[in-house]
Length: 276
Ligand code: SPD
Image (cartoon, rainbow, N blue to C red; front, top):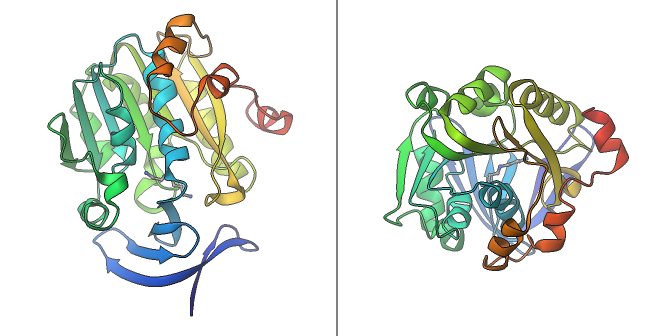
């Protein structure tokens, strides 16, 4: 019998019973593809759970849809990280989207996801999608004022993703957005990763004029409490209007809905206190 534990802090973790495990060492990280009893297939990078067949929809819907429905016409979208394809799949639910660029540093993550996680990666070959196997930081050096929406679908701020949670990187993200552009980033767990959370959100707040942080319940992520931060220099992302609610009705989602959207920025007090 195999059990896998992700150590989420020195003192706690998530443990799952595994039917079968595959191990790949890529140029950047250790990749584990686990077939688990409770969560289906699970993708783990350097010991941290990235996605599972059972709960991935929550993360991918919540990272993508708020930014996409707040943008008046999101034609060009960039996803940085997200080599499993779940965010790309959600982005393509928006009919206005004409072009999706996916910039993932590790080609092995894309290969493993295409082979073993078809329900997550099934839109990676969509003709609207172009895949760039590159470092997101360098990729943005060559893209200025181009995208309508940029989604930062990153692993934790250690190893390859560390530089992508810093102010200098968020400045590049801002520079790559064209007028009216909006970005959304995963900003870690406010409960078990307080410092990662605070640092990422505060760096975003320094760079953009308008911003808002929201939460989702993701069972396989630390503490089950996960955060996202949406930001823009041109659009007051904290405001909502009727048109957005209309757009939302046509999305085929399982977690994101009008009730979640209209109370998106209602945070527990301890969470707002951390990012005041
Ligand atoms: N603690 C792990 C956080 C991972 C966030 N990114 C997941 C990528 C899924 N597309």
